[in-house]
Length: 189
Image (cartoon, rainbow, N blue to C red; front, top):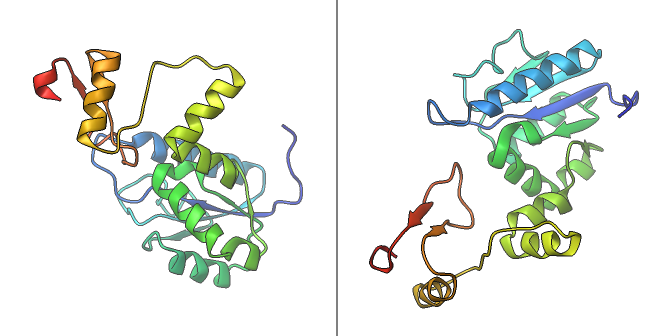
């Protein structure tokens, strides 16, 4: 993909606090993005509430903000740096994507003339909604393991009877896979 010469200043949203030994891929990908952008002469502004990361080292970005990952913090940064052309939320995992969606819903990106790069809001929303994602995969012909959504224990039992065991059970909206389990027997359901 050719370099977009219109982008001179980019805001990167980090992942915030993470459990030691988990989600280090966000810190790694964020540091690599910051390095690459700087090599291309693009000003980098980082927001991350976690000071215990490599990406928040002052040498990594032109401007580092150790602030809560909230739309209030985003507005503060955009007011201090009106030159920001785009936001790159994909380096901060689910936390950054959720914040990007919230800022979009509040009209913040539009108000400040900031483009979203790396992903678009529709793509984030489709991947957040398990049923929409499943429908998209079917539409484009990507094979998947059998799956269904249960909104009650009774519905979960019906799905288990239909699919059989073992089952992978996972909460729809979770960070870091919390609440996921493999169930081998009905008694453990």
